[in-house]
Length: 154
Image (cartoon, rainbow, N blue to C red):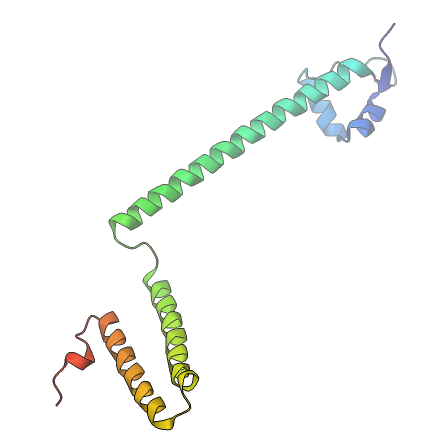
């Protein structure tokens, strides 16, 4: 049974390729030379060759993408190693912003505790002062200073 043939235009429409792409594949020998006045290709042979070309192209693209990801990972690892050596794991401004946010939340939560614990005004004021002193000591500790409660009174 002879192989069915298809015109180059029909094959181009079938595979969704441009005329220039198919002409390039023909001139490079990937696809067989079209024959006849209407430029016919053996369908089975042309389809097989075009699929092999696509598979090879996909394998090359995957290898390139994989190599690119590996290179990016090595660059990230080198940057992290340098940051560890310089003891700069995160940007100092980011660290300060995060610390400010956490301190703000802690301060807000501390101010709400006395009202949740008791309705007695004297007890609430005592708790409020104790929590204020605790916050002051925590702030001093974070600043690397001695706790305020351990400092001599002026």
